[in-house]
Length: 106
Length: 119
Figure 1 (cartoon, rainbow over the protein chains, first blue to last red):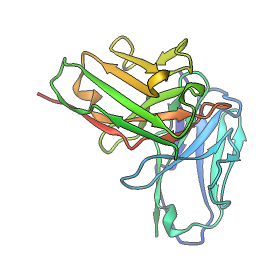
Figure 2: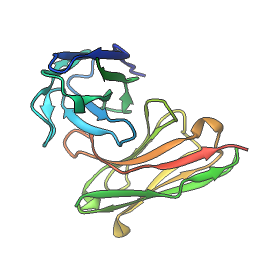
Figure 3: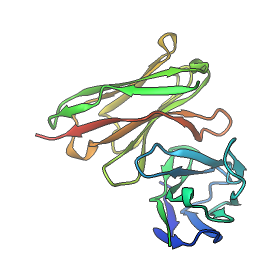
Figure 4: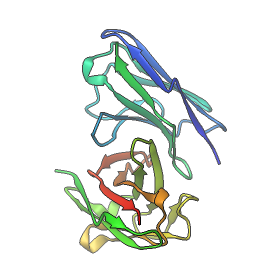
């Protein structure tokens, strides 16, 4: 089974900072990768699919990149409303989520 | 608007059974793959199962294979999850989710229903 590993597990940054979260697949998954945002007490929300395609309505400060085994989610200028846990997920064959990255404001 | 509403959660004893339902509205349900995803208290997301638009294909996580059965009724715009032989580790919020047609990423999620397995 393909495993998805995110780093870091948690991160604290200041408003306006550029934030990067990494996701690594144990085997190549082409670009079959999505990113989700889950705010505290809320339902997960799809941010990015196909590794780099922004879901409709998602702010342009979010971007995704990568292919094969290494992927990144970048927030270009962190906003207070971005406090959340972020999950990567491969969606080919049996979907698998990463363990999550908890993002807080410093 | 596009909406998914889960129901059927509750408290059940180990070894017991429960059937979850998910009512879809605001989109053509029969056009989409659907899935169940769960989240144990304070933990991350775990995919459980998905079903193709016509029910011809299903897939399950190893952790539930042989115990859970996913099904759907396109005439009723409804998705189901029959859960048997429940264990304490099945305790979680269960979400139903719609799979985006081109990629199968989960683009619409319900609010979730809590399942607690405890004696």
